[in-house]
Length: 392
Image 1 (tube, rainbow, N blue to C red):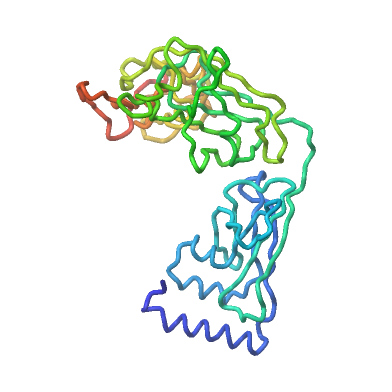
Image 2 (tube, helix red, strand yellow):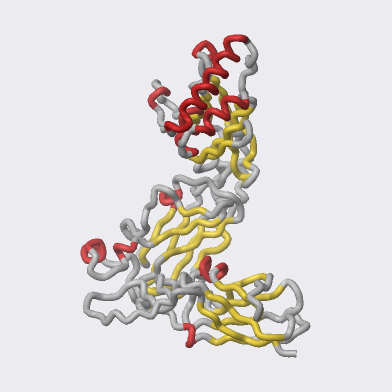
């Protein structure tokens, strides 16, 4: 809705645009183009360019969210084989950005190779005689040579807790999204498949490059006293042996299936239901003038993604030390190598309280507390500091 205080100004702008069209002063039509996403080479975006700047000015006066004015002007559709009434097809999901004189649509998932797409641009400020501007695009098919592989799965250990919260899947190339759960299977030792073990989210949990997928175990199968757990039991049971299977039908961003299926077989240990305690960790320092690593030894395996970004190294003056982090020994050891040689003096590891172990337990806060257990949490309000000294 436009604010009343801006109404007169908007009316003048709209009237001016209408007069310009009537007099022929603004006869150049905008254009729709399909181009690579500047933020990710694995995606294409749709842009409408060449729109009269006065039209942008009118839109900028309105109090609409980007999604609202974007959908009003630009919609993108995917052709569905066999559909006889394309008008009924829903528009693709994605985000809209308004630049200086261009409107950009970024799809939620990359365009599928070989699929025909249609973009339609219709400005409510232009005369009806101009009509709707349309453009079609067919994402090019690429070589069917299978080159993409699933490189790693985290946790990397062969023994995982019964209340494991998530898996991370790391691929060698950008993947196609939207059908991931169709290619993920959890198998028992006898080969039978566990029923609905994963939490199926409408929006899959991909990193921006579409190379890392986060797969959550259904929390309802983890927490005690919850109906899914009471009826179906845990997705994985202590003492059992299970296999996470990612089948070869999983397609990458080019529409090509994986080079081969991936299997991770693991034993299930007891659940872990206690909060993280940094006092049980061991910190190994280093020497000045070298680039020797600082090592933090945990008392239990940590969540791979969180451990790589939730811990930072700072100096006594709180300046961050740049370097490279790696997790070793099945995520039991955090290793930091500085970009430049160490400078002598006091340093600290600053650890965010969002750090988790494999079962979702945080520092001072367990993921689950049973109804009959004593709730005695000491949750840190800020980062936890672990001091160390770089010696001469």
